[in-house]
Length: 212
Ligand SMILES: [Zn+2]
Image 1 (tube, rainbow, N blue to C red):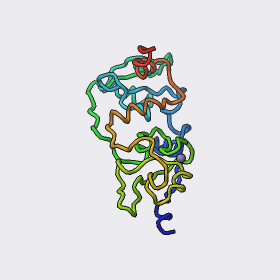
Image 2 (tube, rainbow, N blue to C red; image 1 turned 90 degrees about the horizontal axis):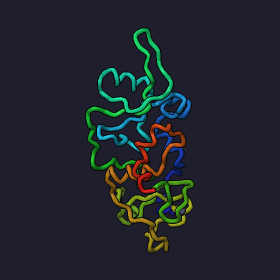
Image 3 (cartoon, rainbow, N blue to C red; image 1 turned 30 degrees about the horizontal axis):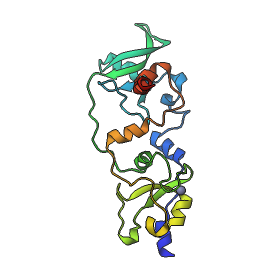
Image 4 (cartoon, helix red, strand yellow; image 1 turned 30 degrees about the vertical axis):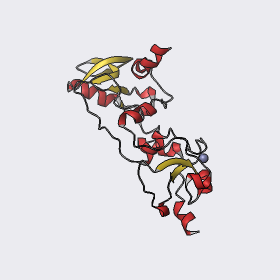
């Protein structure tokens, strides 16, 4: 009984985790609503700073950065802002002038484990009721590391209990590894937000379109 309780972890809904990672809900967050004219932020090499969550700035931040000479405007919305001294179209895509170097390895967080595993139970493939599982149970010395933690749905987590995948007859879909930031970004591209401005598409999917 004790070991089963030890293996049980709180159930997290992938959507809730995603929301938490973005800090705010759609209504309060101007970057999550296309009518609020957020700017897609590209690094100096014209790749998005982040795919997931997509790197977006509120239009006020984007315009401020333009005036501080920190970014170049790549594309704009039709909408304009007016002030006594200028009329200006709101930027829809901006590129940083100074390249921001990404760290090679991402932090070991719940969100990043989900992203590595594409928000999918590594035992049955479910996207529902996601939580985490120690592949080698803790009571057998399994550690809480990239290499021993996988995304699992709550039913699989319960079913497996304090056993190894072999003992439980539940093979792991993909052996867990410590991903690089690049690998996580690649996975992030699989989850585009459901609002995309037309001027963003060139910067998000150009390689896919070339293949088509
Ligand atoms: Zn499952």
